Image (cartoon, rainbow, N blue to C red):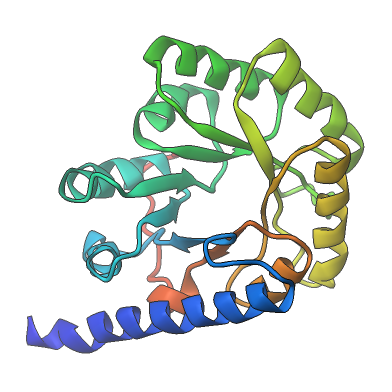
Length: 236
């Protein structure tokens, strides 16, 4: 147990530091406490690391692999029933039932067939989830997300035809491009569609994202440190 104390202490201190930076960035654009939600990205980190953050009072987390989350989070949610879990990785239709059962928000809706599957499963399970449409603002072939030019149509379909509980948009800017351009684009798409929530900004740029209207920032490395290597056990 002693060997783990420095890591635990680091997580707690990092949480304090990140929350302070969020508060300062929020105040600079006249936002109040609680206007920006910190999603602590615990993917590939052990349950013990998430447990430290939970004990420190944090309650909103993000995972990107269904199988990993299924192993890690049921016990954590049993101990901390007010914890909220966001899916921030790509979702395959054959994993929709598991995702709806475990997660409280899905940030990666990006195509009609997936949206329909999620809507059907929400109806069957009667769970209350929040859904975000992922927009591929950089139009990168290797990334998920609806193209910006197709975003309005997908949003309309999700809300009007499928009655999906869409609350906002999410993006992951290209690593080699100025993120503010992508934050501005996402904000514009959200504004014209009347969506209030914007999940954008990570460890290296979340303060800038807040200046562009982020309501959810996704911070992993800044809280838990460098991610350990992931050892795949099958496609999630």
